[in-house]
Amino acid sequence: MHSIPWYLAVLISIPQTILIIKLGFGLFNFRIAFLKCLIVSLIIAVICFFLRKFNISFVLNTLILLITLTTLASLIYDIKLRYSFVAVLLGVMISGVIENICLPIFLAYTGYSMNDLMISAWVNIVAFIPVFLVTLLIYWLSWRYKVVLFDFENRGEYCG
Image (tube, rainbow, N blue to C red):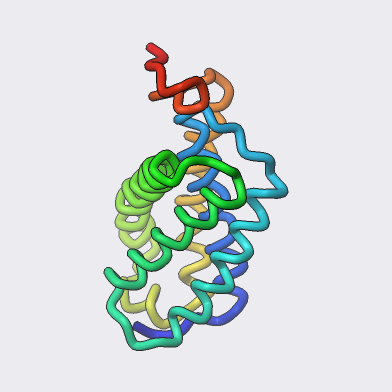
């Protein structure tokens, strides 16, 4: 795995982690203060920056970040570890689905390739913009209409 420039960690990792947290935890009725969310996102961005310098597989990199984000969120937000894991996993899965829908469309319309994304940090940033906007829209809609899949905040009762 190749290393990433610091500005890529800042311009992609921080907003992506904020949306993963806000969306994932929000769908389980955990309202996370933005400052706490930003603190966790900054820590994850620093870890991501240094982790990418090591020659480890993408899968292992993702697992390490997933476990780290779960643990940090659980400690900082004072949420049970299992609830934190489920919320982080849902946020990551939603983000991944959105990315897997938006990136092929972006590549098709711009003529860039996956290699261009790997080589050029700025192409990567531009490609992240539609992913960010779609994820932000989904978060806003879920917040606006108070969508809760399962209410961990109130003893795990289902909110239909």
